[in-house]
Image (cartoon, rainbow, N blue to C red; front, top):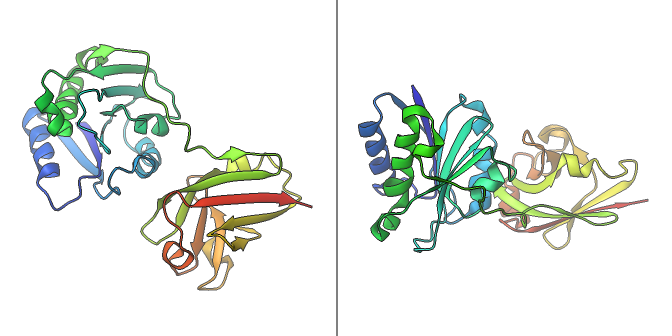
Length: 258
């Protein structure tokens, strides 16, 4: 059984997702198609990468992950297949795959564009057909031309100063919790015996890292490291995004002091 996952910003109202599934079902005899999400905020590379990065490893090895987010439809746009950790990621070469794989790859191939009309619906016309070719023998050469390059994004990484970590919100989950790009690994580089001040939304601040949401009273704000190891700003039984004014790309600052 071939496993193919779909992560897109296409939504659920229009025929696009069903059309891609129909194509895959008609071309691969035994395929299990899994919807990761089609509710990615339009054009949001950080959101798409966060979701797929934190679940792809739960799928069987040799799973094929198709991504369609922020496609420009430009004749200059490239589409790629990346093999990493015995999984395959196919999508636009706009940096989204680099965020999923930590800018690493075992193999990279460029998916050829034969006609400009294919760019009108690249998920169905370019990416899905490449997945069909790949599924036959899992030979990357069947996908396209091997290349050692693919677009990297590093601007979404948190930055470290002498006594500070500067980050931003990269994802708002279904509960309104604001996930940041500040990892526990970066946080633990600092002297944890010092006091901390976590600033956001202009004037709001939190001075302690909680272990679970129930560490504070219902309605109170807190910060914790989530299951992905990223700093999350939440409100116990509340919506932090709405009540604290946190949105994608909102600035987060952690200061360590005596």
